[in-house]
Image (cartoon, rainbow, N blue to C red; front, side, top):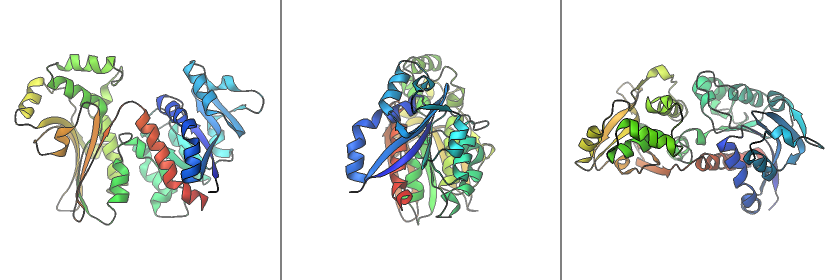
Length: 352
């Protein structure tokens, strides 16, 4: 099989970006043999700056640099030059922008400007962060193949909605042709861990402290525990899958800060469970009511069976019936894997 080399710019070398680079060397032969694909990193960027090399940067050297807590600009020298991140996205010869900068749901930056620059010049984009989609989904859709223009650059973001869980792909690709009547999902890992710990007897404060200790919860867990992270992901599903233009103000949001262990025990007495449920339900007028709130689900509900670090989604449609998917969200590897999944989904179209 002939091998096609895709020139990639990777922005963001946090947990997800590093995990993505770390998984590639062991898969290089498999990608060539199974998919006829090789990835060449012509630029990478972190908080220290951006380096570029048209002959390709070494993922192993980049990962080692980050493990030593050094900025990638320290790798500059020889054919490797320091450049500016936006300039790389605007001018460097590339096929793909892989966007994994930290999520900013208020302004969507720096990812939003990088994605705009790439799409404007016809570079395809795979996203791991969701900030730019929350802030400007309609704009990015118009600039990409989500507009319906098959000549436009591809935009993919399955990892931005619950990591490895194929939440977006199931809805827009695998249920194509059906009318989606509802979506029910657990999309936030922090709250799922905390509610599971509370079901074992811990109070809210102790559950939060334990989630922070094991690295699931952020030092400032506000977006998670107040329901906004799940709402951001539901917003993306509404725009991308349901094709209903949605802003955060369209979603009724309630977090878990008032949930008690007694609330969870009441839900579990009959075999059910209490989860932070993101839900879209089609009304008689054809529009979807959108909400995120703690919800007691019965024993026969698929999401009642979720484990401590699992995410899950349930689609109901007219001709496909009920479609369910679960995923164990154990660290950043799942999101990194979703980036690779997205690359493979569009690679044949890029080659064509």
